[in-house]
Amino acid sequence: MTLTNARTFSIAPMMDWTDRWCRSFHRILSRKALLYTEMIVAEAILHGDRDRHLLIPQGQNPVALQLGGSDPAKLAEAARIAADYGYDEINLNVGCPSDRVQSGTFGACLMRSPQLVAACVSAMKNAVDLPVTVKCRLGVDDQDIETALDDLADACVEQGVDGLWVHARKAWLDGLSPKENRDIPPLDYDRVYRLKQRLGHLFIGINGGIQNLTEASSHLSHVDGVMLGRAAYHQPALLFGVDHGFYGEAAVAEDRHGAVRRMYPIIEQHLQSGGRLNQITRHMIGMFHGVAGARAYRRILSCEAARPSAGIEVVEAALAAVPKSQPDLIHLPEDLAVLA
Picture 1 (cartoon, rainbow, N blue to C red):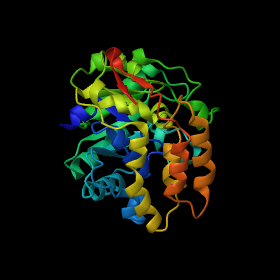
Picture 2 (cartoon, rainbow, N blue to C red):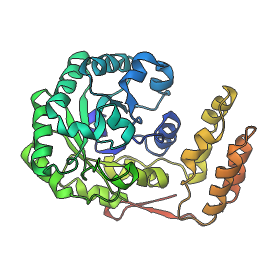
Picture 3 (cartoon, rainbow, N blue to C red):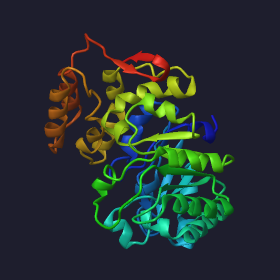
Picture 4 (cartoon, helix red, strand yellow):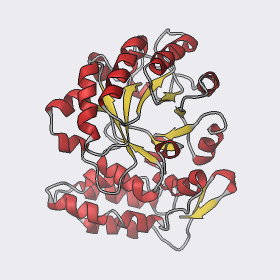
């Protein structure tokens, strides 16, 4: 499968969430979706523990690395280092609105500096043979979203960018918290559609506020790819429908209990290396969303998995709280469904 095809459905980069264990769990649920790392600052790769930041577990690809930064030379070197770890794409964060990111002059504030973003794209393109993409907002603060998005896109296209992922909201850097920036600025999907109409040759993907696979499918009439973030994280069983609904492939042949148990070898290895159970199971808490027994499952994983001595037996106890006699349905685009 080509990377272009993989981009049809992606799981968004989410700070403190889409770490390697989260991605391993999501890969169990979908063999095809493009997974993204959480944002990793270029400086951390240049001066930190590279294996901790960049190592990709076997079988997890396709995976895109999202970088944070605004220094073209540092981003180019970070991309060059990351390429050797086997990533399928390098993505530049031009969308994160957090104060910490702004203080480092990267993230959403770069919407005000399209030529600098373009210089970063150019440097990374010259450093690696991988596709280089940008994930951005419609604009920030008082910017006109018509000109701000076009200015950024055109500058990046001039430097050979391989695609743009657009979170279909403005970011308000002055007055809203990062959490509020995920919900309060209104969504404007039509603005992203117009960008695709104008730049028909360029991959354009859409992100922001998409709650389920039916909504995700509807966007593909207007853009090339769709990206789910919080919905996929909080209701990971949605991902059972991705391979069939978006790629025409057979769905993963697992129920929810079985998918959780497929994480056991990864959990055991993590525990043997000194890690804690909840570092992995925190990504699995939403697996039974909407199913009888889900509250008890969540309670056991949230409380018991935090104990220093917690092991697989805690996950088994959580699974035992969810009866398997009444399988529910995951609703897919075009009225398709798989047993979950």
